[in-house]
Length: 150
Image 1 (cartoon, rainbow, N blue to C red):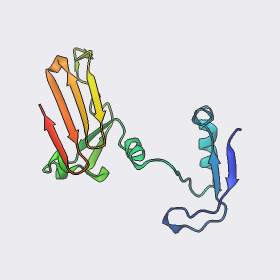
Image 2: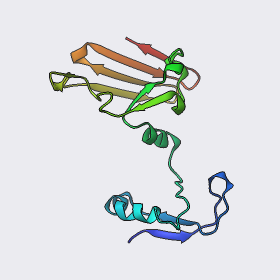
Image 3: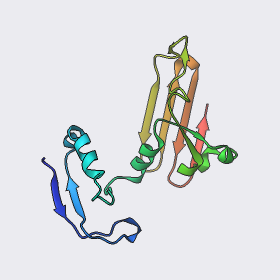
Image 4: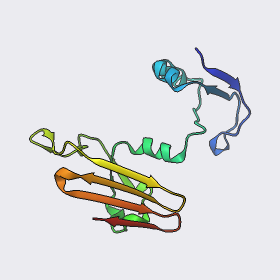
């Protein structure tokens, strides 16, 4: 449809030989409208691979992680401030690990507050859950990652 398709001369990942490489550019709304058609075209026998460009690494990580993850047992001895790789996370479905806690089938809490602030020097995230009497605060600086919880 309104896709902007042009032949390009780029090097795909793993230095694969390039025979016919096309760049397809379309608006997100068009992609959503024609998702099934695009999926069928990308799954065709003649298509050897589909490569994404200009997608930030953190967005790719979020897509891979899904909505529920837990730290793998072999990585649980480390501090949270050290961070984890995607290989050290176990991906769970929301049926294996409920997304939000419930009491008697109803959500355990109705309100949460998420606060985020950032400057050139540091950033702060805070999650407040009044029903559980809990607040988690994460402070980040560009020089050292430090976590403060309370």
